[in-house]
Image (cartoon, rainbow, N blue to C red; front, side):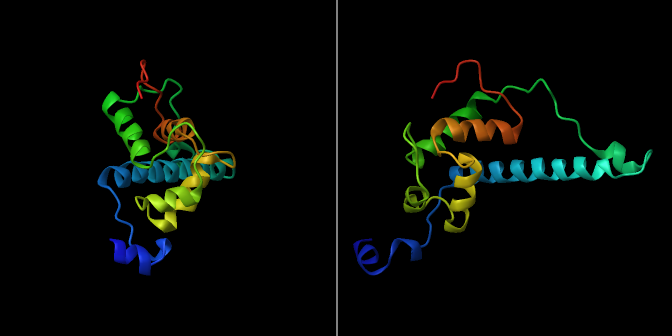
Amino acid sequence: EDFIAKSCPDFFRAHCGHHLVDEVLGKMLSGHAERLQDLAEQKAQLFAPRRSAELRSCRKIDFVQPQVPLQEWQWWNQVLDLLEVHNEPVTQSHLRRTRLICPDLVGYIHLLVSDGETFTRDAFLKTMLQVTNQRAPAKSSR
């Protein structure tokens, strides 16, 4: 490990990853892709002729969101602990240094969570709730 640290810059090292981080961020990205697809279908629906199949195929968003299971909420917080995200804002370089996220995805995930502002624990949890279309558990234990 010391030899690699001395002879190989951080951005050339293989990302070691973690199965939980990969699973949670994969869920975030797939949920985000579904939301974008729904948005594209809604916009296409505006130009569809009346009584077409496209008009009926759009999914409606539930206004009463189900509560996120406590186990899943704990996994999200565990990922934040692995990424060393606490209450202070996190930069892209910090996420890249953890080597738990694929370097090609760091910028996109940072942008998705921060939305032009700051990447924090609360922003990450809020993003996960939005992309999974769920609400926080009654007792949000962190």
